[in-house]
Length: 518
Image 1 (cartoon, rainbow, N blue to C red):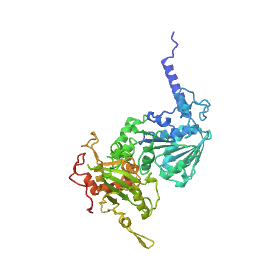
Image 2: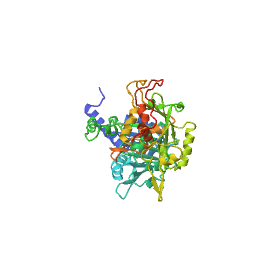
Image 3: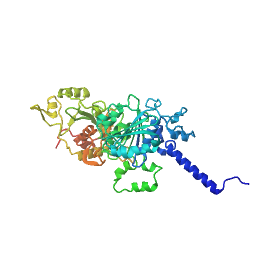
Image 4: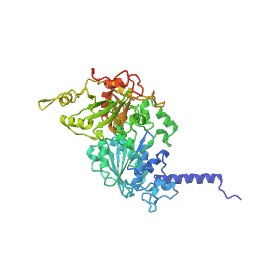
């Protein structure tokens, strides 16, 4: 005689089990949390700064909130479930036998103390970014364990205290930058791009507790530029970890919802790279997308033969240091930038007001016994005179001329024309092997990191919505990009772009010296 339950009894048992499971899930959402598979490297990384760049509706913010909730508990409950371990009781307390795989650590590799305080900052306003985005997701995962919620005068959440004593403190990029100074939290979660000053304040406040910082955002808008340059491009897996997730990676989003978003006619094709795939627009709207590290960069110790034609290009300033470059032209017409000044990251130097005499001495030091054959200068700033306290100050051209350095400023300063000339010098057929018949005319040695950064990261200026502003450029890398542009509109470039020369240097078109026109 069979002892198996009747079909109706089996269905009742199954229904009861489902009800029980849903009840358990509602009491301990973190234990039953499901990860988007592509985000696992983000959770596994022990880097001090972790970035999850994602498209809209890719699950990036939800992933960040999961991480923050785990930090508040000091462990990742879902890892216990995946390892077959039981739910903690009570669920908001870290088990004494918690395996290392489930523990949360600070930037020094020490497990997070509990209770602790975490700083959750939105790149949007408090009402939208905190009240409508972060707060509801926090409620979803730790709602049953909230002891107290403190509201700000604006009616948005300012602080949440859990039953284990841990706190979430909320902030927004709309706050004054002073609000981000002297912060001291166990961990930070930045959702959507924030101002550089706010990020710097948060990082300064992270020192005392070796706090780790996660950033979850769609890479769009003006703040995305510094995130791309200073963090995303410098990811090494140890100090900075980067993961990307697209709307197509979100396994909890229906194909219909993805298709609807993908076909949105209000999103441009360029914008879709950011909003669908989480890719930086800077990879798309670079002024010089032809620039290739593997093709246009020569070894650091490369030096031109003494008899090659050589030039200097100057982009002068009044308070900041001048951007100074040296290039050589090969007999076959290749232009190679081989020396630059200042040494170090030019974008971080704010003040170095040298005198004209100082620069005259500097030129001599940089050039030694081989001065350049031509010196080019910014065609606007170079000949410009100023009045200081009622006295006329000589131009860079006139003052350096008095010191024996003649500067040529009769150059075409049309931005689009000059950039087109640079692209022409950089161009080669990327679908074919580089050889004598398929090669660029412009190169940089590794001794010119500021030039290389300018070629890599010089971009169009964007507005608050992430749209390109026609004819405007981001200022950060403009100086050394301008230096290259001034060379590109000089007769030096005309020589480089003229008919092909054999490797031996046979040349019926000598490099023009002098006779520079407007």
